Amino acid sequence: MPDFKNKHYLIIICVIICFIPLFFGIYIKYLLVSQLNLLILALIVSGILFLYLLGKIIGKYAYTTKRLKVMVQHDLISALIHKNDNWVLFFFFPLTMVMEEFIFRYYSIGIVRDIIHLGILESILVSSLIFSLYHIHFWFKFKNISITIIFISYSFFLGLINGFVLLTIGLPFCVLIHYLLAFMSYFNLSNKIKNLD
Image (tube, rainbow, N blue to C red; front, side, top):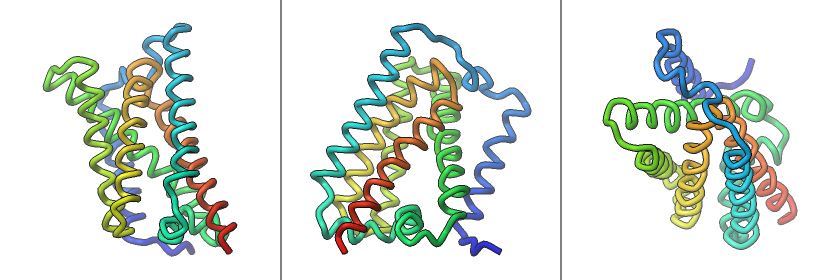
């Protein structure tokens, strides 16, 4: 039996709650591809490449040995290094990406656009800002201002790209992009931490 922590139960409950409004047709338009052409595809690919390169630059220059040693406390990095928690690796980490994309893209953009009636750009900016500020929780985990600023900054740019992705090709692609970029970043960090020893 896996050793679930309170936060893992909270993630499961949040994802279940996020799915309930779908049965009532709320914001269904954000689930599907609404626009796709070569320009949109080029913008999305460019955004993903930007985030990938930004992640590589951050990984290379922003993480000192001291910061890397602090990052061992991250659940996914710990699971990758110690190969001891497949539940985090294969279940809770992907589920967290689903939860975050529902909350910070699907519902926040839906509410800002359809209820508050802000434009597309404003909706994406508000959603990205909220998403980046959500990552202040890393301060409470690591007590390191530099790591917190790194996560807040990167999250803002991810929010901008995924806001555009949501409004053009839908939520499933937001989850996929978020998962792949985050996993690659944590995987690279875990390899750097292993090489410290």
